[in-house]
Every structure is written in C-alpha cells, then in structure tokens.
Length: 363
Image (cartoon, rainbow, N blue to C red; front, side, top):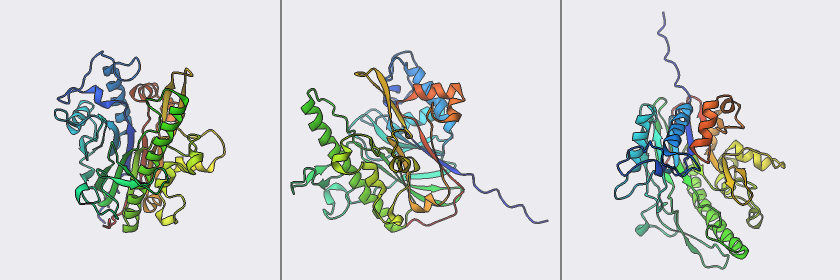
C-alpha cells in the first residue's frame, strides 16, 4: 500500500484590526484592566471592551493580526508584553507579538501571530535616517521630501506612526512574505474652530496623507520589482470617493498605494477598494462606524484594507470585512454581533490565502 500523503496546509488567515484605544485597557506592567472603569469607548467599561475583544479575536482565529492602535511602548510600558498577556488571557493561537519603530503617539502598530504557523521579524528597508541617500526611498522612521504646496520647495514628511515592515514565513508551506502595517495620517481637521480653519487644516492634512501614501507606494514598487510576495494592510484613513477633497487631488491615497494607473504586474489588489472604484452608486462596503455628535447619527466609511501583490492575488484569496450588520455570519451570531460593536469603532478585515507553494522572496 502506498504511503498516505500528508494533508496540505490549511489556508493562511491574516487580519488587520484597528482597536480603538487598546492602550487604555492595560496598566504599566501590561496587565489587563478588567474593571468597571470607563474605557475610551462611549459608556463601555474596560472589562466590557476586553471581553468583546476576546470574543472577536477568538472568532477570527487568524494566524496573524496586524493591530492598529496597539498598546503603547515607552519608558515603562511594553506593546509586546501587553498583547501577549491579552493573548494568554483569551487562549489565542496568535500569541506572540512583534513591533517596529516606536510611535510618537500612544498608538503603536504591532503584529500578533501564531508562532506554530508563522515566523515574523521586523525588517525595515532603507538606510537609517542619518545615513539616508536623498535619492533613495527612506526608511519609514526617517524623512520623505515632497512638494506639498506645488511651489517647487519640498517639505519634510514623516510618520507619527511609522509603518511596520515584517519579513514573515509561513512555516506550513515555507512561503516567504513581506508585510507592511499602516496607520496613515487622519484627514480630520482636529483643532479647527472656524470654517476657514476647517478647510485649511483639512487640505493640509489631506496633502500630508497623500504624501505618506506616495512614500508607501515607492516602497511597494521596490518590493514588486524585486519579485516579493507583498501584503500591505491597515488603516489608511482614506478610501475611494470618501470626501469632497479627493476631487481637488485627483485620487485617494489608497489608489496611490495600489498603483491603479501602473502596469498590471505593479498593481496591488483589494476587492473592496476596487468595488467602490468601479461603482457609481453611493452604497459600498464599509469597515468603520463613527458617531457624529453634530448630526446625532452614525456614519460609516471604508478605511481598512488588505492589499495583495499580483502573485498572491492569483491564489484565489477570500477577503472579509467582519461587519456586524453587513456580514450575514456576524449578524447571525448575537454574541459576535454585539462584541464587534463593543470592541472598537473599526471592524476587522481578514484575507484567507489557500495553501501556498514555496516561493522565493527577492531582495
């Protein structure tokens, strides 16, 4: 009798999830604050938000989660310690954490993953800021020069939350991946009081957000030219047709990163973004839900994406936004539906990649 062939590796599931003020759910030792004190979520206690997050992470059962607004790292606090304590509390397979450059804010970008399925290492490209070639794409903790005002005088662009660049290996298949976790600058005119200030700050923030996306696009092109299997994932604070300012600049930041006008081999794919780009209807997929205090109602937006390089897009991947009202499976499970609304103002996005054959990563 011939020897039985081993089962092929199950599909790889990766997720991106912006957890609203995750940092506020831990003390300085990274211990979970499971109490009745209020969280940053309106009328939701820290214990309630933690419980909801445990339900959502368990339901996703992802091999790796790019966490946006991860707990802070500072002189006393540790992102990885807090996340690994969270994973231990809820018995998650994704139980090891890695992060990159520290944010200027209390919101980090981190990757929580299953070490039995993946290996992951922070591996940024580009020279350190003090040694950077001005003609090369700089490292994400450096400075990118871009003419924001179209006056032939480039301005300094930097990330308050530098993207997280990872070298990841799927241990089941041996396939090597490059991941970039993103939290692009918000376009909201924070601090503005008068209509003129709102307009000025909104335009300034839009220009900075687009410049950050052009910086990201330059890195994407480096990877695609090298033949890397690339995934760019996170919160872009942007999406096709999201606001009226897009008309002033011709396109959204996500379109820039995707390279929608590039040759097919240099384009990144996300079906939710493509659905909105192709549709003339106002309705479309959304990944975040916010309350407008002025209008006293909720509004939704598509802000969270998982972009795949062409080689990965050929694997028949399946994307999913875990929207509590729009996703039938989430709607059908009351506990999960309620947890998604309690846990964050964003909803997770996942992509399932079928069993992957071995492939090299260039560069």
